[in-house]
Length: 403
Image 1 (cartoon, helix red, strand yellow):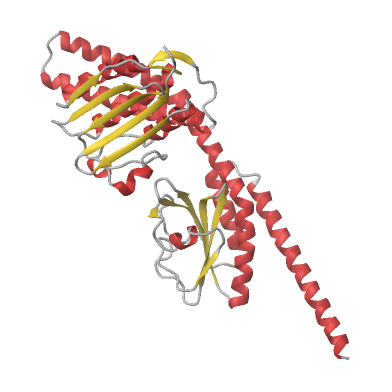
Image 2 (image 1 turned 90 degrees about the horizontal axis):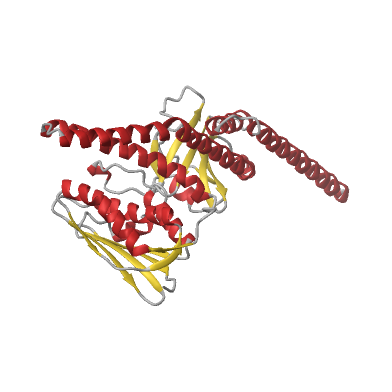
């Protein structure tokens, strides 16, 4: 009799496990089916959250996108709709529960739920399950589910959400990339060309005003408009170029060129801006032949000198130096600017890595990221040293070509 009971219990457990597995597969199938028919990233986030909320009997659910370089989490969607939260609300990644969740790859269950923008006072008795969505080793977002149940029920929810997060991560990442490509296409066709046309005409107009002896006020207005257009043009150009960088910078030319002469030309273009800002811009010339893409390497020099001008206050000094050794050609750009802390150096070359936001300095946060990718595609390196209040030094090293 006992043996018969044991066999019956084992059969019942097997049946329950099979039914549970069928339920899980059905849920995953529903997730994949819904995500396969969404038009954009925002819709994908909402579809995932709504399905989890409906199927797992949750009090609330949310999806928060993770921007690792900026160390920011951005709220994408929250259900039910009764929660009042700005869709783009930002939080630091070192804030709980994100800090703990992003330290690993598996979902975690939190009993003592911290306040969140959509739920400043968590409901009594509810737990929070936080599931990172990993893609290629990095979390692109976090799924947060407020739910109830005993330890066994919460573990069941946690296990299912682990499967959902893994399954949904690639679909959400693809939707996000498609959204970015659409944005870049819009820039290409609707913003980039007219901005460059307007910039060209504005520079001609400013030059004419100078020759006609217009008042300093008018010249100042013309200069302000020109700089604003340059900022918009830089934003558009860097975002367009980022797509090529992310695809591996295909089609780099390998022509012989004098990197020192190229640096001298670009420094010359920045002298008017340095003069207007009362910054001493020194170029220590020198030749250094490398094999590379003149346009791409010109962008590197432009980014480094332009950054030095942006982050150096009036009365400062910038030195641009070319050094040639038997093995390498090195470009050094030193400034006496604001500098950055040692702890922030590793973020200098990341996407959207911007500093000194309190000074309202314009920029995209992409220049150094693009420069590093271009230099490395040429077989070189770029490094940085900096000290707060004393300035920064950037060094580009490229393989030298025999003269």
